[in-house]
Image (cartoon, rainbow, N blue to C red; front, side, top):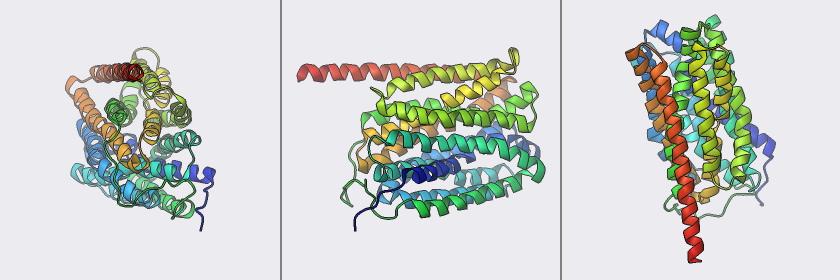
Amino acid sequence: MAPRRVGLVGLSAVLAGAMALSMTPGPIIGILSRFFIDDLGLTRTEIGAVATFHAFAIMITSIPLGVLADRLSGRYTQVLMLSFVFLGLLTMAFSWDLWSLLVFVAIAGLPAAGANSATNNIIVENVPAGSRGWITGIKQSGVQIGILAAGLALPVTATRLGWRMALVLASLVALAGIAATLAIVPSGPAAWTPARNAGERGGRLPGAVRWISAYGVTMGIGVGTYAAFVPLYAQENLGMGVALAGTVIAVSGASGALWRVVWGRIAERAAHPSVPLVAIGALSASAFIATWMAPYTTPYLIWVGAVLVGMSTGSWMSVGMMAAIMLSEPKQTGHSTGSIVLGFAVGLTIGPVVFGWGVDTFGSYDLPWAGVTLNFAAAMAMMVLWRFRARSEETAVGHVA
């Protein structure tokens, strides 16, 4: 029986939905931070610690889950990740103190560790080259769509029904994602499944994966900090209510939903992955400076910053995931993806707790914002160096030839 082709529209929707559900628990920590402070008695440092522990779970499981995705089908790995979404959000709703919340956000971190590997493998197995850029962008835009939905719906639901019921309702959406995955993603070989030996393992990962993983650390610091603290920053420094502060995250998600598609297409056509990543680093620095300056100039800058975050920090993974797909052997896709996610998770682990500690220690957001901005300058410098070294290697190979 010949392998069947898959409808790319339906497949794109399922992949975007899986990414939205898998990545939403992280931003939920920031969106519901005021409720955690008021109801569970957490400090800002402890809010940062919760976000850090969530990221730590992503960090230590990203490569094992990436390898698992290479050995299982992407379909069943995705179902497994969505099951963890359901379990993680449901248990978070029953948290009673800091320690219980830490355990439950760790469970909710597993989908973020494995979802990229699962969805990238589904793309490699089911989508022809030439169409992978825009489909990768669409599925990565699911992350921002999830943030948009969470930023709009959760504060209102939590205010009216309580934050615990809001999390219970959110967990039920994951069950719909599991049903859609089983209905649409093929269970057997699809038309574009690459030939491979079942027992064959990938060799050494491409050097590009290490560069992108290192860059991912800087982006993780930015994303983790923004998601965990911008709603609280907007409330404390700009006088916003809970719902309006959640909308700031939603605006960044709406912007990112578009730009992840754009960056995915750009990444597939770029001369080198470092080129779009330098631009993303510059836009990220601009976004955080705008957010930082909002209380000192005009509150409208926080909205400018949210749009720019969506264009940059919140969208960089489209380039990273496209690089993992293009530069890795098919049997290495999950492993390469897991390595890039590992770098990103290291940043997610570092950023929130250090930022929260800085705010509590210095009594101001200024120094923490300055530190994150310098972090993006380092990201740009790293990518310029990578491009320079890549050009030097290309020149050396040309001379030898």
